[in-house]
Length: 298
Image (cartoon, rainbow, N blue to C red; front, top):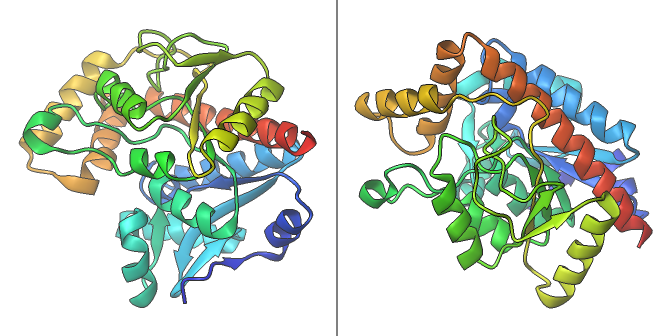
């Protein structure tokens, strides 16, 4: 029941040891408004293919874990929107047994990567330690899944709605290497600069692949984060702080917090946040494919 149903394209690439990049489905159903998530997913898949790798978009459909979704299947997540379940690693079993539509988070996608044998993933920003975590203990399960999964995750750091310094500290505690893609600091999602220092800087995709290869000798079941700064820099800290407070005051909790805050930021920024978000997601997918390709050549 929990054996993933892998598309023929992805299965063939894995069997031939060709590069595969995992992509999440939460961005399709929860990450954008007005169906923009479907376009963002299509852009990511195109960038992976353009770099010479195979995209493996992951979600749960009709009681099955699916690895490598078709356009029609992805459209189901877009049509469902937030009615689709948001699936972390803890939620997969229940979603499958109950035959629900489940869009996987970074953590949920990584759990499926372990089952399918995929070693590279791309996303926009990972989850992490939420602002005010001392009162709520709201910490994303993404971090633990990165720590326990043999996958290199390419993102633009942690979502800037989070407590990024605290997230960086927890990644260190979990022994997750945080590699900066040609940068010395962890990007703040919409903003390239101002974050805490990374553990090491890599200049090329080949260097990132070599670091991953060496890390997996030392820690065979551990993951890495490769943090790529956004190409467009957008300082939204004031709007983010306002959005976080408004969502908190409205009583929203748990997995609903992040999509609620992102939607409010979109409104407060007159849509500027959406364009930066779409671009960095596609750029990260392209970089993940380049690193996966370099790793395949080692």
